[in-house]
Image (tube, helix red, strand yellow):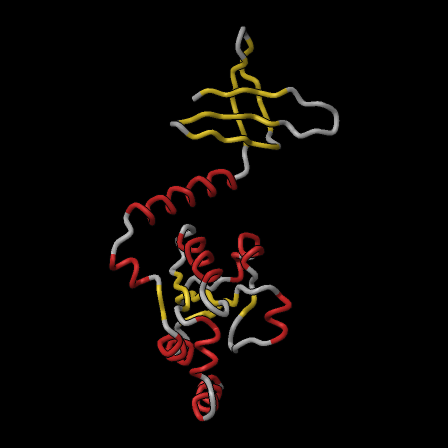
Length: 184
């Protein structure tokens, strides 16, 4: 492990760059206790937000997800709207609509929560980790990105293969009535 300490200027946070096992981390805003000083500064205690560690762990899980990817994984990461409708009726799934807020306001499928893709990292506490988490958008492009992100954070996530448009197609007429009645 090697470290490089950048001098703090007035109004700036301290920054340390750490190289460890072929990974480089830039840590901002830390408390430093100097144990000894010689030609080289020895760092005794470095208090860092666990955020850096969590990001590294998520990256490792993402790498594992990719390197361990199989036909079984490919099947497991998907769910179609007919299966999702049944899981929602049973209370076994949480539908996360990852479209922008304006899209969600224009139309959405209940029960769902709106967590736009660009806000997902900051709203992870809204995800029910006891259920199958299904990400959805009209087709599936953003939903697939969200699913991979959630899986990299150890959340059992799937994406809706036929998208919200496919789900809306399956919730027409009598199907819509039966679905809403089952949720009550």
